[in-house]
Length: 263
Image 1 (tube, rainbow, N blue to C red):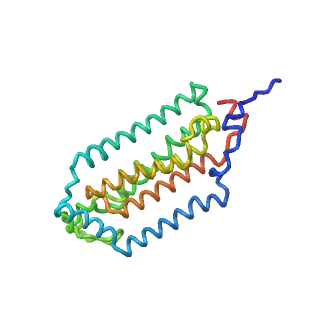
Image 2 (cartoon, rainbow, N blue to C red):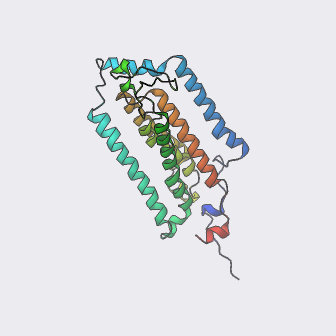
Image 3 (cartoon, rainbow, N blue to C red):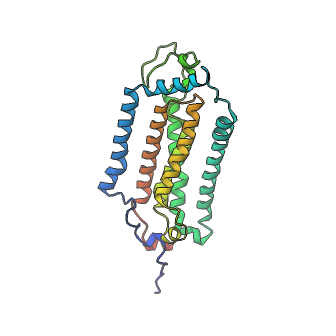
């Protein structure tokens, strides 16, 4: 009986290149442990220096005791509204590639990567939005120090019955950017031939893209008075942990050649 020989460049029959996540015990500790330590350190420092109130107060006072960029075209229309549309287009493009991988043979090698990228950013954004509804915390512009009506409370500080609930934590718009740190894991699993043809498709570049997009969205929202800085730190951490967990579930076992032959 003749055997099916797959090309050497087919990712399903070749191990991931050296230096990329293999989800060993050591790498798992690094992927979860180090980010957690950095997250706890950042939150501790921000809390110790009262960074939420100090930074929001600086932005508010710089605008003449007003959130002058709250409805500015740059932060509201361009970064917030069009940024959200950009992320939606990216998600649809990835989902489209996954669907096409069942019909276009050259795309079949990247099917698992497309599936991961269609799933991980959505799960991260959904998690953040669920927590927003559960925590019911304020945006800066809801606080009496910055033009609102609620008393300022530190993160997770108990609230009185008179306190009006809002859904501002974690940072929803920033999560639309930080969710794409998933590119770090996705680009590391691309077929070798694809990586050779497009050198920019490297895990580090994917990580920088996700961090950059999240920072752009997060800073813009802080300038609008829509989030405190701690909201963005929490959001980045949640997006990273979600992306790592989904990657571990989907990439820790590579399909063998027999499974790949059926694709």
